[in-house]
Image 1 (cartoon, rainbow, N blue to C red):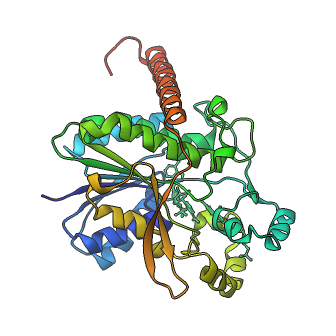
Image 2 (image 1 turned 90 degrees about the horizontal axis):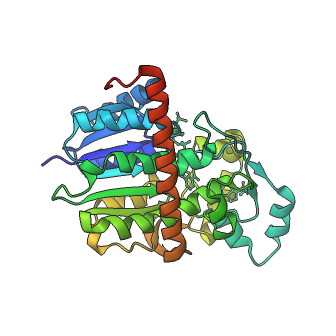
Image 3 (image 1 turned 30 degrees about the vertical axis):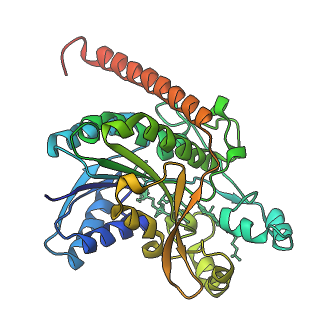
Length: 340
Ligand SMILES: NC(=O)C1=CN([C@@H]2O[C@H](COP(=O)(O)OP(=O)(O)OC[C@H]3O[C@@H](n4cnc5c(N)ncnc54)[C@H](OP(=O)(O)O)[C@@H]3O)[C@@H](O)[C@H]2O)C=CC1
Ligand SMILES: CC(C)CCC[C@@H](C)[C@H]1CC[C@H]2C3=C(CC[C@]12C)[C@@]1(C)CCC(=O)C[C@@H]1CC3
């Protein structure tokens, strides 16, 4: 039977490379590119079709940062497919990143230098804002929109008789100290990206606890440091190209510099081939590339605990209920009590 695979943020970077790799792995795949910009999605589809001309590639309009778009996209998915084998939650943003150069140069001469390159600890801050749903944009995009999508797609993901998998794109930049359970949206901090990725790690663990018995398995990956639009937002692409020899050199000391989207998609590709029962719910699966350019996957234990993960899960369910009641009030105001 053909596998149904949905990839969010599939039009560029690691998401697009993953699609390419999955089609090479399984030509029978039914692949759905879920993107917020249909022109870019169409271009990605055309690019994939040049190397896989008989592939089954669908497009879906999905802006994970908008509640209305997630609800509409989920309806569309339910109309099109009767099950989902893999849902790759890859879309992500890091808006207005700022590098702390002083910390960078200080870190260069400290014993923590390798960890600094691998995790960017202490180097990056971002400026977040509220989106049109009244949610912090980074939280809404990197976490909440994807969670709402899972909830909406539960009929295709849970209790279908087959197992289904969700694979979150987290980061080595996810850090407990950037996350505050009393401010899960990170409205008052300067590291919304790190916070949102830490919340992803917690949420994945909670999903496994609540949904494994219904056949849904959740995993978390980190693609390593990859040259994509996201990193070109941190430093311009010409600068990255200029320092590429230094990056290859650093790769000898930290295998987290995967650098190309193809290498970065290693862990997502690897997970596609694994049996869900063999996976560790507390592990993050890292794409790594050795100094000689060999790709491999390593599982590393996440710095998470059951209690915080359960509290986050309840808080997010509560937020989901608030958001749903807002949507239904807005619909009643717009259409009256008529069935939509
Ligand atoms: N690059 C890196 O070094 C690392 C990346 N990651 C994670 O990997 C994932 C992929 O990022 P990467 O490939 O690097 O970056 P890209 O910017 O190349 O890709 C991100 C994708 O997400 C899409 N996207 C962003 N916001 C939304 C939205 N609201 N709705 C739907 N799609 C959206 C983008 O669409 P559009 O083209 O329209 O903007 C794009 O297709 C992210 O989750 C990122 O956090 C983790 C660790 C390191
Ligand atoms: C001379 C150069 C090698 C200097 C590069 C310094 C920094 C810009 C980078 C060092 C570690 C990088 C890193 C990321 C961004 C760029 C660095 C801070 C990420 C935060 C990108 C997004 C992620 O999810 C994790 C990455 C960790 C490492």
